[in-house]
Amino acid sequence: MAPDRRGAIVAAALEVIGEAGLGGFTQPRVAARAGLRQSHLTYYFPTRDDLLVAVADEAVRRRIAVLQEAQAAADGPRAQVAALAGVLTSPEHTRTLLALTQAADRDAAVRRSFDALAAGVGPLGAEMLQAAGIDVDPVDVALLQAVSTGVAVLSLARGGDAAVAEHLLGAFLDRLAAARS
Image (cartoon, one colour):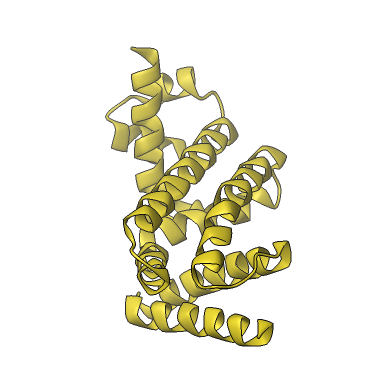
């Protein structure tokens, strides 16, 4: 039962951070969302930082899984761009990643989760570049990750328009392909 309870707490914590960001991420709020007393929450996660690391690990796992599913379902490079744009325009996911980025600034364990995100997303970016006819270069993969992050943040700030995100990502890939020709 303990792993299920831990999972339920982490899921509740992800909801809280996705809605309220890092500022609203408190143990009492997470405990209430999970339907627990705070003492039960602290039994599983003694500190807010312990919970934050578990949330970071789960957020990264989920982000990679969603990107893998979207890419696997896409047929061709433009469909992959559209699928990536759809993932990037999810405000809850972006809000969570921004909150975790802020936490990573002071917490090495959360930073390690971001290393896992980069390692998990890198091969997906390489596949997308290959599908677009672009020779894979580690710098280009890193650029795709940076552009994708910027698109996600811009989308959050502007209210989430997948068409704009798709256009920006497509333009990036087109320019990268043209530079390689």
